[in-house]
Length: 153
Image (cartoon, rainbow, N blue to C red):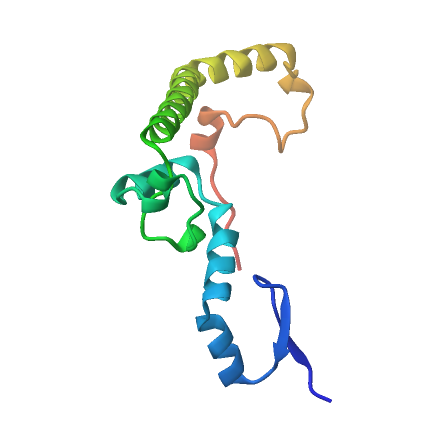
């Protein structure tokens, strides 16, 4: 008994045969369901750009339902709706610009703020270097110049 192919867009089970699946994928119900699925992930700016390129649909003038739905070659938004979408996109861009400016202002001072933090932290955690073992103490340059390495071998 063969398994059936399940189409996630149409929510239908069909026979698992490549020619049947291809015919299903080329069908209008599948194309419409797939377009509706991906339409929900588009952002407002992308929808606005696509609708500006299309002429108005005839069903919009007749106040009727377009039989093609989401795959129609024409737009289904009135000029008022397009204007409102444009305003929302502009408001969103303005908010993003303000956030970006605030971030740049904070990043501009990051070096000086980091140095101030490190100076405060180092001032609090002063270690007495004389109590350190000789291997961790700072090297004295005068002793380094007098040093003669032992001969090997």
